[in-house]
Length: 294
Ligand SMILES: C[S@@+](CC[C@H](N)C(=O)[O-])C[C@H]1O[C@@H](n2cnc3c(N)ncnc32)[C@H](O)[C@@H]1O
Image (tube, rainbow, N blue to C red; front, side, top):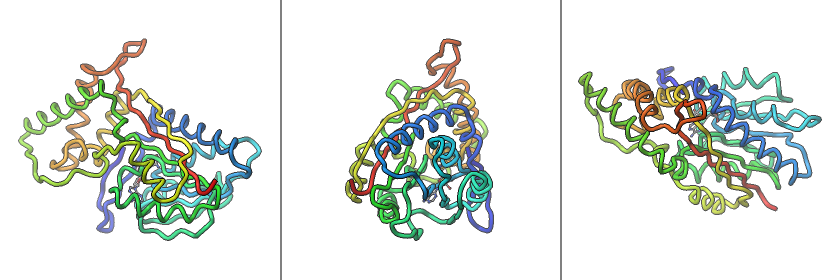
């Protein structure tokens, strides 16, 4: 899902192949349609101003725009991401479909956003990259940018509930094979350091508590299951941050290669089978709606 390259001394990454898989689009589309249905039902106004936090290549905001009710105006959109490459790609994609476009390149827990401005803050597939302290700091910045009655919408497939118990053998087999592959080419674990935040798999309850602590009203917490097939697993396993979470301590590019190569045998052995006998592994997305006031 990403490639790391050093640009101007800063680690940049491009998040695309995984975001373009049918499974990823389907599960995120289903979540966004559910969110929009609730907004239409519960709100007395259209979504005119929207922030897409950790926008990546703009997948979430594009799905959001595509699924707004016919007859609704196009919103003005603010893109935020710490990757300049992501902002550029998302801007090109979104610009033709919005009433206005602005962007900020920076970490969400550090950016300044105007007060009482937005109807919706959308934060797709990104909150788990932050530590608990950073999540709190980010939500404390996001809450005041929402107007009264405004919505915070976020999802994550990196929670305690995301990996059902019967899928754990797949992950274990993939890691064991990846480690064997690295050993076979003479690669050793280089560093023993804390694993990245995304591999902490915080429970849904943590997010509900955090929202309440910041003063949001939790409107809805849903779990949406997705079947991920081999190609999708290969894309996500090739994403350096994902591989680093699963196999921390190894050089990220080597960990990515090893994790990608280990998908086929692990899914063949431990995947469930669809009616066409194709193996897949179920992953659960947590989808949360919270509101200011009400
Ligand atoms: C997995 S991608 C998700 C992209 C998109 N929202 C989606 O759902 O398809 C995560 C994105 O979060 C961004 N990101 C990670 N930590 C961030 C932070 N603290 N502040 C802003 N962006 C961040 C990354 O640069 C990356 O583009």
